[in-house]
Image (tube, rainbow, N blue to C red; front, top):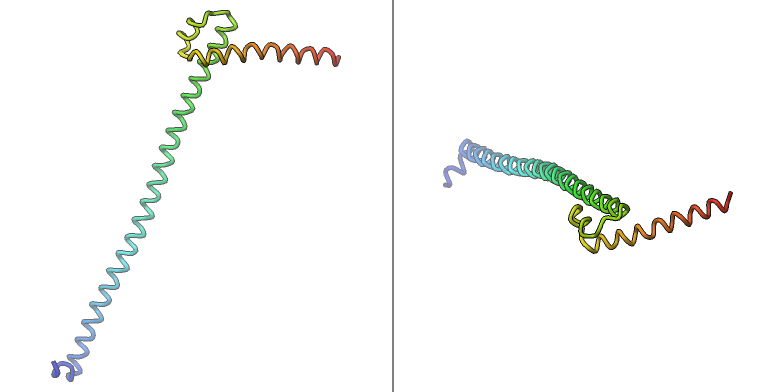
Length: 125
């Protein structure tokens, strides 16, 4: 060992070898860090894209469900206006008894509100 350390050429070669090993280790470390950062970034982008797609799908599904429910209620209202019996309304629209009762209350209050508005309008003229 003493001989290698006293030989300047051997010392320089050892130093150069160690420097290259350190450089390679540094490059591997930086490469891993960059690769990890890139992987995380791509993962986040893919996650966001999937989340948006799922959100759109859920929104469409909810919109369709709400539209169907609204149409059921509108059909039930029309059937009430045409004096259909409760069983027929529930059978045709698939609404619950409580929903039907709520619609009946709304239908009863709406004509009264409409009459009150008409009375106020005619009084103004």
